[in-house]
Amino acid sequence: MKKFVWGILIVFMVLYMNSCSLFDSEPGPKPEHDQEVKIPKEFWGNWVALTKEGFLSSGAYNIYTPYETALSITENTINKETIGAPNKYQNNPRYGYVGVSFEKLTNINPNMVYFECMKYYNSGYTPLKLYLFPMYSGASSFTGNVVGFDNLPSRANNVSSRAVSGIGGMGIVVSNLDKAGQTATATTDSNGNFTVNGIIPGDTYEVNVGDQKIQFTPVANGDNMGTITVTDGVNFKTTYSGSDAKRYTTRNYPITIYMKNTGTARASGTTYKITLDDGLTPVSGSSNLTGIMGTVEPSGTGNIQLTIKCDSVQGDYEWKKLFIEIYDPLSQKTWNDSVSILFHASAVTIELYPPYDRIDNRMDNRLSFAVLSPDGECHVPSPILYHFGLMQYVLPLKMEIPLLQGDYTIVVHGREGVYEISDNINGRSKETASQFTDTGRYKPNQTVSQAVTVQLPIMAYMIKDTFDFYKIRYK
View 1 (spheres, helix red, strand yellow):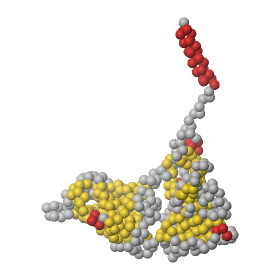
View 2 (tube, rainbow, N blue to C red; view 1 turned 180 degrees about the horizontal axis):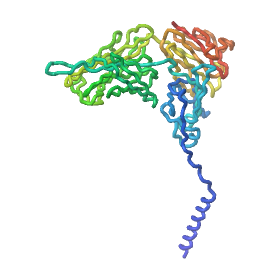
View 3 (tube, rainbow, N blue to C red; view 1 turned 60 degrees about the horizontal axis):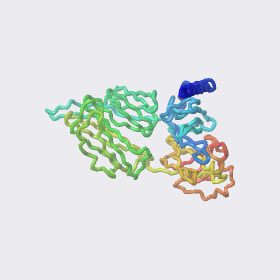
View 4 (tube, rainbow, N blue to C red; view 1 turned 45 degrees about the vertical axis):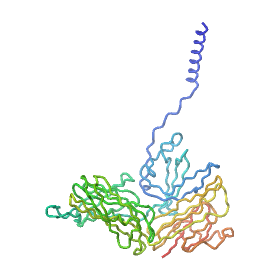
């Protein structure tokens, strides 16, 4: 009997608790449908960034400033992450960037844009506020060549076939793999040469001609992708990879040559020969300049590692080539291809020292700068971090860039105070920041049209919520 009574009580209590939860609790919020977010086409492209909030991070003060110095923007992605509507950063994030907005600052600089959003980092979203400049402001293009074989190979007559005959009138379709929907077309001339205009250096493209689909990443305006051969069976295309950094004379650079079978048949007993352009020398791997690849299946690759050095260039920079010859004994075919590598004669290192005055532990070193080169490329420094206790700082900011003929434009933005800009050619300023009182020096220079021509080093004063523009010339 006691067991029966206790059973009834337990059932009653369970029913009572469930009824309370049904009547007392409020229904949870319904999940909102994804809002379609599209970025206007005028903001698509590759940008470099000046940070509005600086690079400081501090766990003690809950400050987590992002280290964003470059953005690749498409219709609905930033740095290949899909953007989301503002409501998407409340709970479980599915988007790297939400609530994005753009504002043109044509009154300061015709190419300048203010960008703001919320960016997800590790454990939550944080505001991201940047001033953007096009990574490349000039028109860019790359070139190439389409060829066929000069005759039919004949083992009986000991005749081989060489890919040297340019094919005219071939249609070229080029798709930007980094920015979906961006395509370009070109047509080969009578010698098989073609030029693709309106490209973005640093983006990877798929070049379609005949049955060939070749991926190519131009590093700068004027790059050459070598030779594309149109043929049946075995086929080869050569590319290379190496450091993305600028290359300068007298320095050593490791590279890897990729000889890919882009055809539909196996290559057997394949041999190769690599010839360096005038002024290039092998530092290591010279024994790899000729050799046997052997069997290479369709889509297979023969990889050759070299370290090269450029002794000299003509002018400020020059494209140097590596010429590659590949021979397949079974098909009696010989391919002639090349890869182009850009070398600059020399470099300059420009350095910015943040404000010395009005130090605030949470706001120190909030200064950034960009340099627009005469060739239209915009450079920003990568943050150099150091720690002091729980605080993390950036000091100083510097970058190595090619030394070119013409005017450089420097733009500085950040916290109010005295700062210095110097280079490795003329050295540091002999002035003392603590004794600097000339806050109007070089002013007004808050817009690009007011840019003041100077010779580094300089010391100046940053006024709150403004920009300082300068022009310098080395040649």
